[in-house]
Image (cartoon, rainbow, N blue to C red):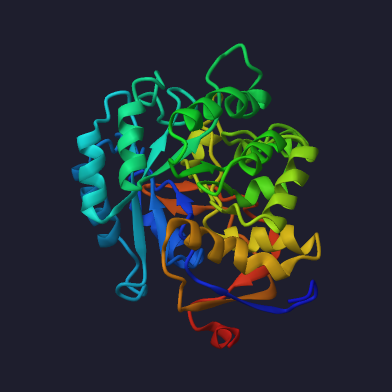
Length: 358
């Protein structure tokens, strides 16, 4: 596919896609239809932390019951995760693996991001759980940031991947790890330095924007996320990794908050991108003349790493200008999507649109 392509067919499965539904499950209309997903990681911290297999299975049932009626039966698969705490036991890891529906465990350093207060405070305490995960083949998904308040917010990912994560890998060298939403050249370098059991996801918004977007013309809360946007050099490192290395694949980290929780004195971290994640990635790759790797990045690499079968369904991305809604319904309130009110030149068509580019 050349840089001037007008139609691109992509596999619809996006196994590493990372979405926070925050209990307002009607937002799945955007995640399952608009983003064209056939699979999605269920948020391990919707409001109350999902720390047990029983909680994860209950949450999975609620997700499936809220899917839009036009989503074909058995065409959408929520891949559930557990929230790792200091008290997660090896027995719980076994239950998760045996459930057949829990695919991974998420490590949040306590206090690193939204709803992470019950996260890990002692890496020594989680070693028994990680040992069992290494044994049974359950993946560890990592929010990689230091919570040391003496570390500059723009350097916290670098700090984590230069100290904490190397120590964890040293203790559990065969543990399969996904460094989620890496945002820096340091994060990229760490992943590239590790063996085939370590991979990473990159978000659409970190591929397109640097930290200037937070301050252009004033404070822009809808570009505030954690890990925070970094420098232009970091952004270019992410783009290069996404294009050139099979160790990197899309993980959207779409994190909606109601408008009033973003546009306020102390706003929440998180960017809502589920409405156009594929279009955003297409913009980033087109800017480099590399639309030819779009399908690999959004569909194939993640499936291969997670051991999931490749998708059979195809979706079509077409060159078409459309205006992004300023707001979407979100529970009884609204959520402001990334670039709400602006336009984009790519559009993901509905299932079967343009015969999926055949």
